Length: 192
Image 1 (tube, helix red, strand yellow):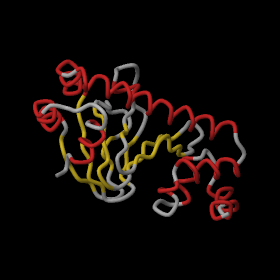
Image 2 (spheres, helix red, strand yellow; image 1 turned 30 degrees about the vertical axis):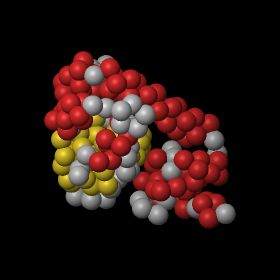
Image 3 (cartoon, one colour; image 1 turned 90 degrees about the vertical axis):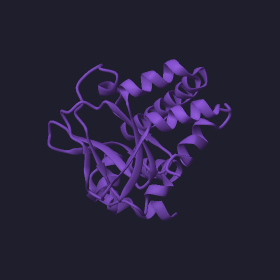
């Protein structure tokens, strides 16, 4: 039951065998966390990829000016990791926090490598997921660094409408690279 959503995504176009499905269930682990619970601290290794069944998890860090920056927010049926730390390209500077009570799956780097070696179908799907994850990040970087606040709010409406009424203005503002004050002054554009 806890694997239904991820199997739906992974089994989408590539019919996985019962052995491959069993292997996915073996390597992905189910857990729950409460709202405001930290599931990964900054300066600890991010050696997991998370898949959200229900709830919301965010990845954030504090910059050298003391501002909290929300890099990514993952809700139902989305993946979240710090790929730099996950693949040993650098240190993890992010904290992962549940913004709602959450149920999620996670897989370690070692277990992911075992899955990738065991199934070409899973390798192909992993490549598709990485491409999608990368596209989300490129869009997000462009939206928060190249646009005014009204364009950022428009981006939020189009790309993340499911988050608007579920998380605080302060976190939405930090996700958009804006201050809470500017965000709340322009929040009326979320409705129009």
